[in-house]
Image (cartoon, rainbow, N blue to C red; front, side):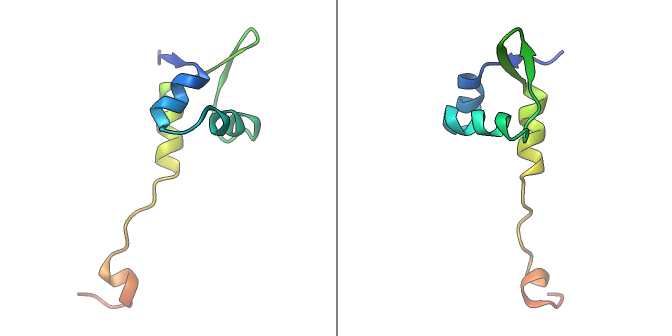
Length: 68
């Protein structure tokens, strides 16, 4: 089972503010777990969020429309 992180811990791991993480939760843009009234975010949910937002770099072909 993944380690569950608090909102401050998740913000630190993502190098963002707690407010941003809370907004992700409110907008249901990141998977989270409710433990009673506490919110926790699994490590795999953080990884999935980062992977989903990863943008591949442009290649010369993408920029010029022709092969190098």
